[in-house]
Amino acid sequence: MLWTLITFVGFTILVAVISYLKTSGDDQTTADGYFLAGRGLPGFVIAGSLLLTNLSAEQLVGTNGQTWLVGMSPMAFEIVAAPCCIILALYAAPRYLKSGITTIPQLIGMRFGRSTKLWFSIAYIILYLVVQIPVILYSGSLVFENIFGVSSLFGITKFQAVVVLCIIISVVGSIYAIFGGLKAVAVSDTVNGVGLLIGGFMIPFFALNALGHASGADGLAIVDGFKYLMQNYPDKLNSIGSATASAPEVPWPTVFTGLLFLGLQSWCTHQSFIQRVLAAENLKEAQKGALYCAFLKIIGFMYLALPGVIAYALFELQGDQVTMMDEAYPQLVSQVIPAPLMGFFAAVMFGAILSSFNSVLNSVDTMFTMDIYKEFINKDASEEKLVKVGKNIGIVFAVCTTIVGPMVYFFPAGLKTFLDSFVMLIGLPVLSAVFGGFFFKYLPKYAAKVIMIFHIIAYGSFLLIAPHYSILGGPDSEIHYLYAILILWPIELLIMGIMNHLNKKKGETAWEQPDVKAVDLTPWKYRWVAAAFIIVCVIVVYAAFSPLGLGA
Image (cartoon, rainbow, N blue to C red; front, side):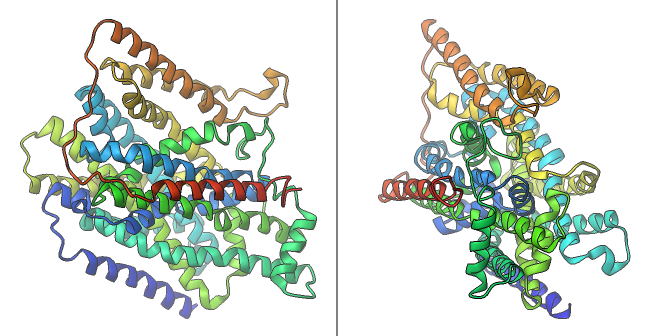
């Protein structure tokens, strides 16, 4: 236990020291310096920060819990992220950097007016504060409680342990997000990303080794463990979900439709992701970062999906199968990680949790300061004043989310399904506003508001009613939320297309995107080669985990 504590503290301090050394000389007295790292992030830092912003405990626990329950189909969330990152690199990033924006609502404001900007800013901030950050805090605390038994160690209840851990995560994460600015967050993400790749990839190999020994291996245990998995659970290794599957399984018709739309929302319009791209020193580095991240997401199934399937096979063999999906990954880790490495793995997990928390918190601070305070409260605020406001409101938001976080304890399991489905209540209208604004040059100013109201009513009703496939003559299970997204986004684009056509007939002037020349917009010359390679990798991985490969 002492060695675990020493290695945990040691790696955590190492990340903090590197982050401090890399940012100590930076000018954080300006809005660009504090919120956008001085527009100077290189590609590899952008890639690491994108990966760690996306990856936290709710994914490590949630996605592996999903694959424990339904097999490999949820790995689609990782694989489909790759083409979304390609679209970010080749289509969205050039347009974002051309406008020199700090936030996504700022772009929406340029296209649709100040009041629309306020609508979307408030909606995003509420979503982050009430749903996303509390889920990150709770899932992170749950991981540490389940793996390390904090409640037993200190003689407190499980809920009390969750409260204590939420406070610790919030305090440490806030130090990065509030006092270090975006660059401190990005640098710590990159260092933690290296640790996460090492620690995350350890789990499936240790788990296969344990499965091999449990199945009576007479050769190399890892190989025998994989053979046992293929021979006894090929259905679990099949990533092609039934067309009438319910969440958390992913129906195959939604993989490159509804799931792709969800991915575009996350990777191309989510403020905490996009802020890293907006902070690039030029378009070339932004494209490198997005495409590097695309490749990292393809191999992410190794530590975000495969361990859940191995856990199911191992627990069945041992006779100690868990009953809830969010318990599968923590129990697997506690069983298979060697004691000398537990501290390092704990530090890596802590870093992943912190990265998502401080990234989203930093983005909320940025949106409030730049989109609400500067635009509607104090237009003449100085650069120093904006930074001060950002830090102060960050403290307020951190306290609020720390209070809400432990309350997630009283909700049912299945954290990732809940988060993915609920985020789209606001996320899809943002995607429509941004991409629709680029596609259609004659949209009226009220178009984004119409789409937001329509979507919240339509998608909100779907979530509340939870219709079943039985109404269409199928099994009596809930229609997957990805089908609702599959149908709604084309409808919303069609509505925008009609408004665009009618406005054009009126003789309205086409919208032209301004170029503020914030950074060099020369693209990376190898972007198309990298994109083609990534697409080939996507096809190969999907074929491997299908009835044509391991899922036969």
